[in-house]
Length: 208
Image (cartoon, rainbow, N blue to C red):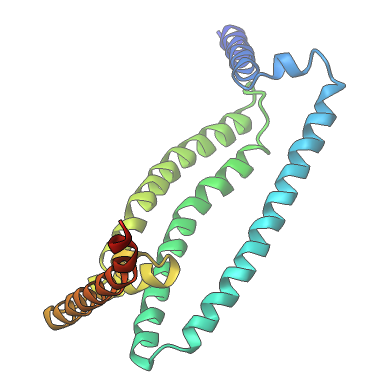
């Protein structure tokens, strides 16, 4: 009975290994091992340049935003600090819910795949259960993090969007008096322009 159980576990491990190799396309890469280091170097180089570019862009963005922040009024600074703190809490919530899942995956890598031993069965079974629990926690964190941001006041959210990505919709709207003054100014300018153009064209029209 024990031999049959051991044989079944070995067959199951072989099937899982075969499925993993097929799913990750390792059977294609391993046919030509000379391409694997080239592939790793290319991917690593792209990742390094991407990370450096992101940090440089963040530096210039942060410098321009700090210049804008220094010219703000004190009440707007307080509101923006509150919004930034909420965004930080959102990020911390997301990381704290995702971190145990990643740690469990790293611990599972130390477990021996040979399931004929009881200690290996316990290691694999425990890490599998923990991964299941922490994956649910990570999904809840993904749902909870945006919900925390929606708890902000609408004015704070609008100022945060205006501070990070200014758009035309976030600009101050004109009141009725300003609209009337603008329309009157445009009408006067248009009438003046038409009269000037007609005076300039009148001698040429009389010739014909």
